[in-house]
Length: 396
Image 1 (cartoon, rainbow, N blue to C red):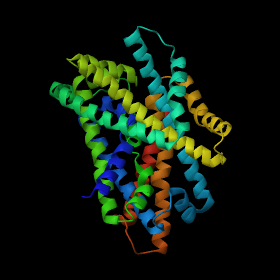
Image 2 (tube, rainbow, N blue to C red; image 1 turned 180 degrees about the horizontal axis):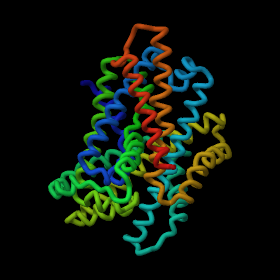
Image 3 (cartoon, helix red, strand yellow; image 1 turned 120 degrees about the vertical axis):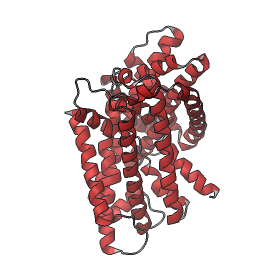
Image 4 (cartoon, one colour; image 1 turned 60 degrees about the vertical axis):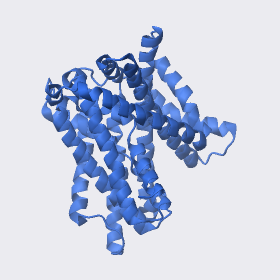
């Protein structure tokens, strides 16, 4: 396995792993460990199939095209509009989720480190301004910062899992909570959040160009690259549910600071407690930087902004005002907004690739094709409907 393939695997895994991992225990605690793992494996299977479907579409359209160009070739302007709207909605939702999560951790730090009561809305504004400025600095800055922070985050995750895994209680892991909610409601609440946590598909077109359309290598990259987050997520759930307990985490009502504080209390050593807090910070910050850079660049492209200071300020405001307003008025919406992000993600990585693959298969019968045929496309379409229905069930 050469360095390009290893690097590509790291890109896939790194794109998936991020702040969504922090939400997994909060979203799945009421199910219990083993049902949660079953859901993770199922969504992982869906993510692999959809990634290979997108690979098929990319390879048959032509190496070098981005997602927007491919959608235009196969589905025309209407398809491009849906794709662009879905991408914009996804990035806005993720940014809003990371602002709520980041500001809540900032409030926690102010209280625990400085004995300072920080207003949540002020924390949202501070977090947005301080970290949001990186988006306007450009990809070179974000790339350097993100690579360092992500590497540190992975190291901290390995240390945390190694130290806390011996403290895991099988009884707590097996615990299933069914309080006032029905079992159906618990599953419906968990499905969209887990689905969003496997959203690495935005990098596929880039990898197709990078590996020069090598279908065998790309298939290996997507399968292995998506399997690494699955392993990390299962270990993270085992550590969190197996130490704090599903019933306790369910009682946090989606509060990220409560989860972080509970994990810190489980740590026997002070340095592990600090590592846990730093890990949570890095998971949020790395995701926030990557998502906001993509959002900033996308809006700059849509508005055809030039490189002047005034244009950069205007683009920055368009980028952050909508998610900032959401974070200000839904301060506890970290898990909820992550779940909402599943809706545009379904359109981006399930429905649109399905339509493009169906059209291509009628016109071209050569080249790479994902297994399953029309039955596979039908099943993945049903899965997309279920994911959207789950989120609407929760919202309504």
